[in-house]
Image 1 (cartoon, protein in one colour):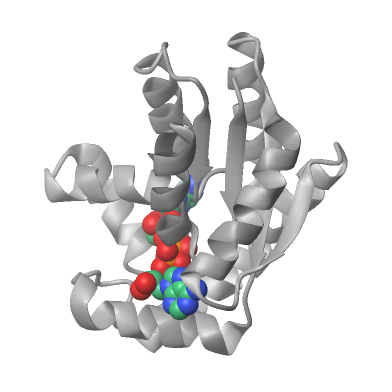
Image 2 (tube, rainbow, N blue to C red):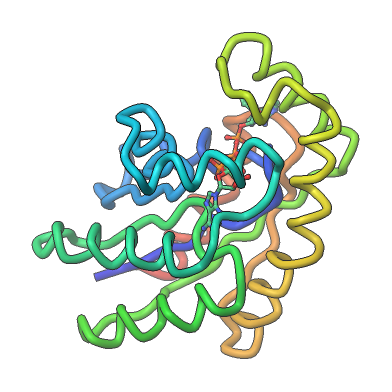
Length: 192
Ligand code: B4P
């Protein structure tokens, strides 16, 4: 089993690159953002709780997302590996993920950290907001709050995995294909 974390600030290309990576490597895609948006779309109690945080650009509480990931891991016993997209986003989530994977006698193979300048992130997200219908993409104040939240709570995830020598930094600016090639190069080095 080979498990990957695709890491980066909001708008860095995690969702975009995940689609391409799962098609190439046959991994199971687990995006906490997508899982949360499904809960909101079906108006579950969890979704209603999450929406309040997401609309303000804040992270959803750890126990909610850790529970969702635990359920998703259990629901896919035959997966040949997982691609975690947008998870973990705090140190507590990282510790919880390591424990869940240990229980399955596996671990994270690599953390691919995409780096993109703040102005480019804002430009991409506002642009996506024109067509995505996502309330967290249309307001620049909320987008900036998401980036602040990233620096405050999420950037430590890279520090956490650096302790285990698992982080590779990737330039997240360029064409989607150029970035995909760089990501695949790092994965191929580790699986061949
Ligand atoms: P997510 O759904 O994870 O979304 P994201 O960080 O906004 O975007 P992503 O990085 O995937 O977007 P992409 O660049 O692909 O999170 C949304 C919210 O959910 C969070 O704010 C939080 O509230 C909550 N949440 C999710 N996970 C959580 C967790 N673990 N804990 C707590 N809360 C959690 O796309 C951006 C745009 O850029 C697209 O329009 C794309 O087309 C464009 N783009 C991509 N690559 C490009 C390139 N190379 N050049 C130009 N444009 C590009």
